[in-house]
Image (cartoon, rainbow, N blue to C red; front, side, top):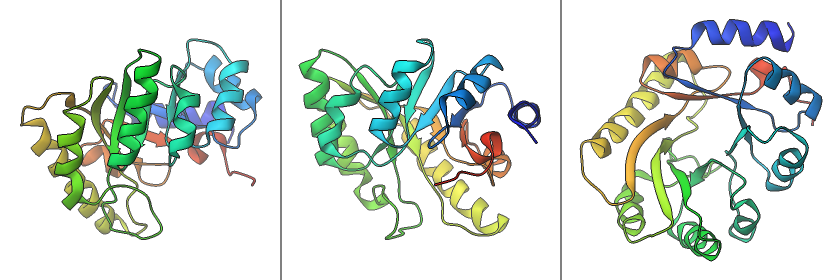
Length: 218
């Protein structure tokens, strides 16, 4: 199937209130333009350099999402280039984002990435460290948390539902409380293989790459 057919199939399955992010990492600009011409405006990249190159050569109304692990020394490069950083995972990174956005008088909108499966191979904050991070966000002037993001452990549908429901519970708990600089607008979970299950479990933002653009060639 091609990008047009893939997008038709996916958009037919996604409710209107769920944001679709086309994960375009490693894909050529021509593929992104094709998706753009079919109506896609939210694109996700996981490497700063690649995002910056595509940002320069594609239409200015694209909303760029940074979905990869963000190194502190790269934060300064994406100020004013991304609409949402999906991968706030430490107090040290939070302080760097605050510092760099303050220097340009811009507001960073971010999601807290949670390592819901406690996997050593994955980034993200552990649930037990979440309250400390939220407390630090409340002290910021240039960082606004807009929700949570997770990449769940690989597994069957039962296992996926377990982790998605766990994330939804954490998200709902935070949503019911009052914080400075923290609102729960987005729950970003679900990718090409499991987005339908994620949506059933409460996700309102899905990140789909191969399901739109086909297999990646590294």
